[in-house]
Image (tube, rainbow, N blue to C red; front, side, top):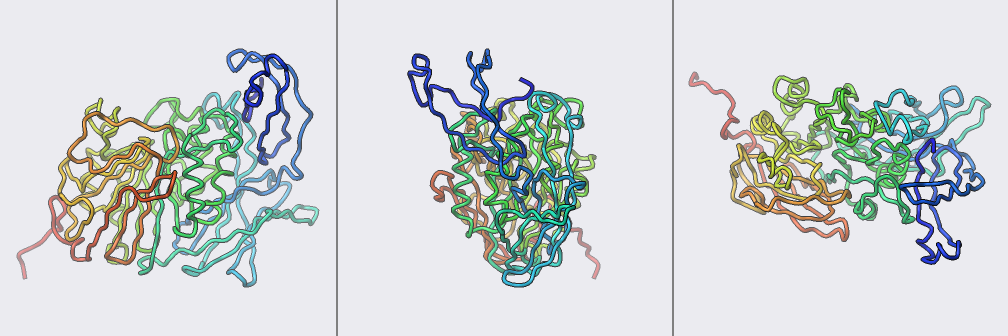
Length: 509
């Protein structure tokens, strides 16, 4: 075949006697992927497939229609970006977003258009059997938003014959809170989710827990404000059709909440492509697909690190697929980001990255003896301590683990559920159980490991005000809380001098 199938089923799934009767009935759920579909019957299984028959084509009414909107914070606190996919290039139609305050008159904002071709891929299967035309990615910048206000929007394309093509529905979102605003603010964090097929079919990669996580977040949509998916998003690994499957799966979330992403090994890594690690994990995508399909407020999306302000939170999102060590460009940026937090206005300082640069009792890390990425925390832990980072989140390891407030591999607080007073160490959390097959722990349980859960789940942070933060770990299968703690801290506690985190003083009066 010149291209890999979108997905497949075994004929004997619905009839165990298929080999004897030659009769079977299979149902497939199709989504718009900007092209016609046909069904092919093969014999010989996946190891030795031989084409037996192929069906007629099936077409969507408008395969080029605008689809799968995904929101993200812009570079300014009062800016929201809307990104979507369509089959319309700029020589066919002008993309835009029609939007405004709910119930009031609407305005139209233009969108930029990006795409990529086969030559942009670094290797196979992305350049060969995994290649599919990605269509076009459009991004519009909605500016001067009123804080906490509800907006509605729809996607549009103005064709050159004067007609318009619209998204099938109107979507909505809320403007971000003003930086430092004292109000209820709720954050979701997870990594390594991927996708799965609701019709039970197979594809290149199926993540067994991804639908549970997605569906739980959809059910709870009114109870959080923004999402951080910290790497390993679609697990397409060079089979590009799977990016459509992923964006369609998360659309109910990403179309109404800012869906912020980080770069992981399955988005970026490829030999001789500039990635810090050089395995074949991206399947030849080498970051191009993720960087095109998802907007992040980075200065250069090929360097996937960025900061984000959301009310009382300051986020510094690092890119573990580029060098983070002292002396690197990214290390300098991380320090600049952490130093820029005004802790009186934004008391909750969060660091997040894909690979574990902090602590994890994962079996592989334990076998290495590092309990983290080699060289992961050597330099960064001094920055986390110096700038008093509250929580550091990591994915990559497909389970959940909470680490005590820690510095230089030593717990600096014996409390488990209520932290208060002077901040003397950063709490590390592995939250890579979004959906990919689960990872094993080391048989050794380090003294710094407070809670471990070998299941799919996500974290919810709730800031009630400038002094009170609630942390909850929830399982994807039932949405119940299985681990939690609270932080109560006043501004003077952030300023207080602790080991390797003291401002210079003088005896002069």
